[in-house]
Length: 155
Image 1 (cartoon, helix red, strand yellow):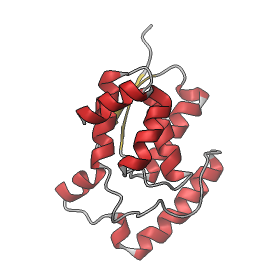
Image 2 (cartoon, one colour):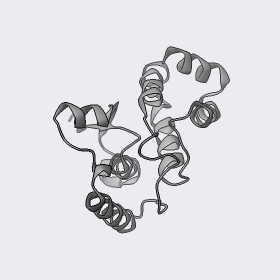
Image 3 (cartoon, helix red, strand yellow):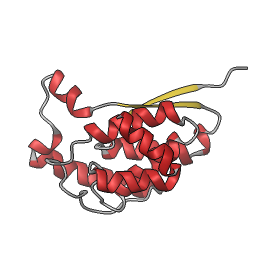
């Protein structure tokens, strides 16, 4: 019998993508699934379909804070109140998402570990993982200097 397949399209910029990633990685429900992680640029989708980003509305932001906090608590997902450094205005994830694409090709077996570490740094530790001085050491800790340098260079 073939295993179920699941694709998670994610952007580190999205707190909901973090919640989904954590649930998929840690819930026994998904242990039997072959999961494919696909980095995307959420803001590009938002712009392409003509929507306003959530942070353009105080009501949406207030709702998100309540919803994310409740969801994290309900599903025992690590979460720290507040927003990451320079979020959302200066938290463009274009470069780090490109690094993740390179990582998915260069070392697919460690790719989920890198995603998890970056999500944790961004949404739990509130570090600005969009910045090379933040994401490069995180990736190096997991992959080592040689592979990490190659991935960053490819991106």
